[in-house]
Image 1 (tube, rainbow, N blue to C red):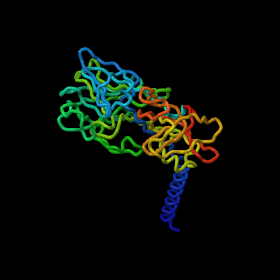
Image 2 (image 1 turned 90 degrees about the vertical axis):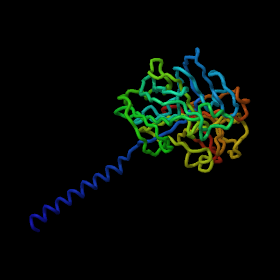
Image 3 (image 1 turned 30 degrees about the horizontal axis):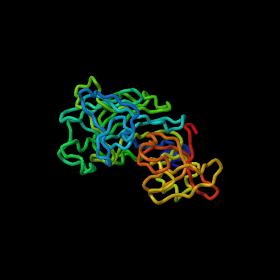
Image 4 (image 1 turned 120 degrees about the vertical axis):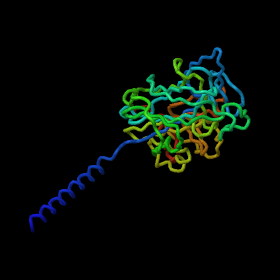
Length: 359
């Protein structure tokens, strides 16, 4: 073999070995990056502070057609919360991730606008750390929002701007071009602009709760209040949503009908689902029978979404069970987000069981 041919042969051989070893490494070291998305009802705030004198404010529910006080238990059904001047709403989310997880990217979505027809500076804080401010140029009225109920006066705030936030390793980015895929597991293109150098490692996301504060600071340049919209008001069918891209054990987010139809697929899997508290009846018409399992109480109630009902409970991550909204054993309309493990009884009937953080 000529020397030049030997060199070419050896080069190809070495390259082939490198590619083979690289393939083996990638196969045996698969990325364990996962994503969860947590919808947060805009009325499920745990704390607030508003400049209420002389500024007005209001909480509006899609069905009750009335303005409520900020402390009214029925606020959990809110689809629009608004205030003038400065102030904030703060939401508490129980950390759903196992304690050995590492958050790589935090995402946040909400729809908002000014309360007055001029600029307002909306700032966002995560665990007490200000991550960025977004200026919105006015209040959007006169043209009805796509999802805004017909009974809501047209000259009132109708819709807002979609605000997307990503906190990455190198800083915080904000965009306001809507893409529904962005709040799901798959990535979507958003026109982001860097607004601060606050990175993911500064947010203390290994603690037991994640606090989200959205509002207008007292020292803001533009203080024209804020409207924040739920999924049944405004132009976008999404409520306030927290997304966590993380490395760690995979958490599943099925609809209840998926669990009912594929119980063995989800057995012993950790799930996070947005549901309504049920009673002993299933308003959506698709339910499991009462499980026959050790430790399962026949007095347990159901949880339900728009696909079906499931017996059991779980850890509430966001929201609250509000007895004022319905009788204890009757179905309710408030949305809660729960985390639990799917268990099967001897008949392969699925139910949801508490799954504490770290398990």
